[in-house]
Image 1 (cartoon, rainbow, N blue to C red):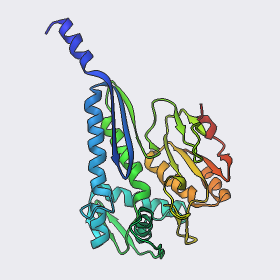
Image 2 (tube, helix red, strand yellow):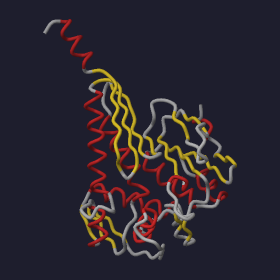
Image 3 (cartoon, rainbow, N blue to C red):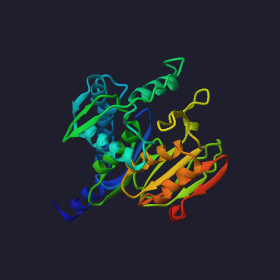
Image 4 (tube, rainbow, N blue to C red):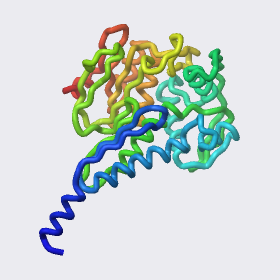
Length: 289
């Protein structure tokens, strides 16, 4: 092959790729730039959809549905989520608790219009993880982790030498490659903040899906259903799964407790909008343009 042919081939393998699709009942986007961008974007999309099929509790064939139906499953992804979830039970003093799958299922069915009444009974049981095997005496709610985990895994699938990009899914974003906006919960076109960060980002807020004042957030320590704030945005250095989980946690807590938890959490900053007032942790503005 001549030098000119080599240069032409290299150029055809460089470029920008975008993939937009539905996953986890929300809009996902993949952006890749550089070497074999198209292949990387397709790989990220395939990873996200494959994981959704395993982790969607409302899909009777998924690993999570089998776990909640039979009390046991052997699956590496489910085991990772459960292990992380049990970590957060301890670190959030039970506000984030994956052992409430029955509540989560009834709540989501109500929000989707599949049931007319909302019945929430906050009962728990034991959960054990041994390698890739999970055994539980109670239905599990892994939704507060799954979307962030899928974003993380899809971003990893797209990564490679000579390539950059990110994955976004319903407010959860792997470390972005440029500025990103924090959407207003009030329907304004102007964003609340514009972030420029190399940490993962997640936003939680009841304004996106609500029915009769009820949204997807709940606090099992108080048996309370519904977000306490208009919106919560978290940036986390660990991964998007952590940002996702802690944004959900803070949304369920009182303002003072939410800010206290976020201030004490290593490598994490938070932005809370409460009754129209903006509150941030001390280091959040370091991630703002």
